[in-house]
Length: 191
Image (cartoon, rainbow, N blue to C red):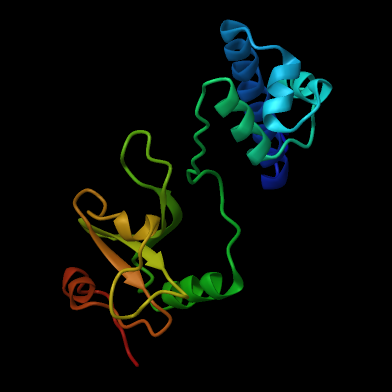
């Protein structure tokens, strides 16, 4: 039976791999442009031995600032971005909100959690997808969102909804939209 990698282990492995890749690019650029380790060290305020350890991927605690300075000195530009990946750690409030929402659905409605968006290469996922006879809704659970409009950021840009479906936000004071009630006649909602 294969074991699941924990998020902290996955992040550590990826971080070390990124440091080694950037370090090799720094070394290749330095050798191409011919400055010495000492010259690069003086320009960045580090010893030549520290620069050498970083270039060889042996420095285990390299900061982003150190890498950015080194890349600038050798004529490169460091760019860092974050993308959703893996299962996020849910906070208690969001998990409770999704559980309350799911509890209000009719038993004939199918529920799937953390459903990837149907776009090739897109790593984002709906918090849930509810489906019935010929319809489906992507669900976002927001425990700290603004009730008067979409929040800024990744989840606010998820529209349009799933193919052939719609997008609904699930807020702590959830009241189903008229669209979900009209699309699912067997759904019964009582206050």
